[in-house]
Image (tube, rainbow, N blue to C red):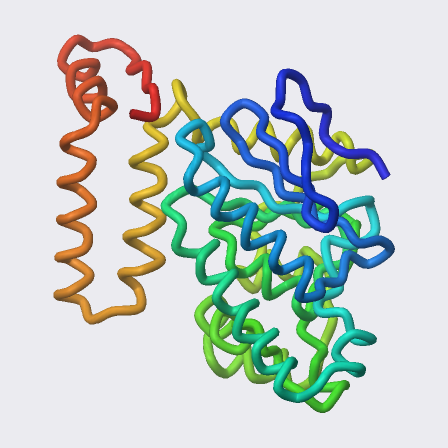
Length: 276
């Protein structure tokens, strides 16, 4: 159950969601073996970690993964759901929706590193990320909630339809089909599949991929506002989306990195961004 090598990072904290920062990247690890299923307590820790990463000016990219090499996450803890009241179930789902919306709307790039099976609520968490990278041969994808007599209730019905189209999303969810990462790539759910001999190597590849979006390689504020413009703009009328784009652009025009980028272009040199 190897994880990414970490050097010069902040001290790791969190029990159900481990949180640490490395090279401007906040690594959030779902940690409830064997399947990293989430409870209300885990969602509270995930919520806190998202807010911490959002508020930290030294964090430019967020990576979410699962502990170990078998599961990213198998979704909500079914034993917990079987024992609580209907009222608790409702508010549990509401809070999970709010948490994933917070992840989706945070103006920093979010990458889900799928190190193992990513099913049910686990896939719902992954779909709230901006980019999904899977380890070749490490597991399956799918939303099999139909077998429990319920629907994917943490944004799954909405985000899957936006990724693959309504008809295909309905078919995938009503059959409860589980499929490999290659099929996920074909459907547009997965962005990349990395081949790695173990999970440690996989996470090293993911972190290397994530570093391209951090200073001095990229203007991290521009990366985050591109993400925000797309994620928010896609859900509102076109004219309002254009207004949002203009406002985000104006914020960037006032940044030090925009000044550096324009100056570097005129001076015919590579820009050195600072994330400011």
